[in-house]
Length: 212
Image (cartoon, rainbow, N blue to C red; front, side):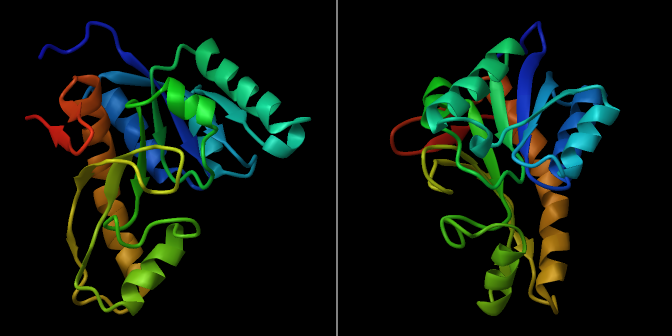
């Protein structure tokens, strides 16, 4: 498959520091990722990911449902922001909220999330950030690692695209797990988006295949 002639337009959703956003920005700037981050959205104005975006002159938008008269008005406004910037793909990079159903349906097969553990275990509502790493640590698991999956209407249930196992047999804390996993997150997220843009992620009802 040939690489698209124009750079794909990507929106990234964040809730915190945005180190995965930075990995995507760096991949875009280096040419590894044939895509451009055109919009960064957060559910909180305090997310440092917004600062990262502003430093790169990337448009930002703070999306808080409570600021609207109804959830429908909120989701309509979010959708209009995505359309305004001609967004083609969406990456959730440490975003802690479910996306509205109208967004999920409109971008089906073009929305991915990165989760800091090996799904399907250690997923679901409340399983994010250090909560995940504490659960992994307490389980005495010998491996962990990030999972990139398609996004649906629920937490962490979409089709798994790629995972990277990390040896945690010698760690002494959840924080050490977080550090090891995060390094792999920064590699796997740009890789998966690159493959999706190139049309090399094939999705069926039962499985997802990533082509070389």
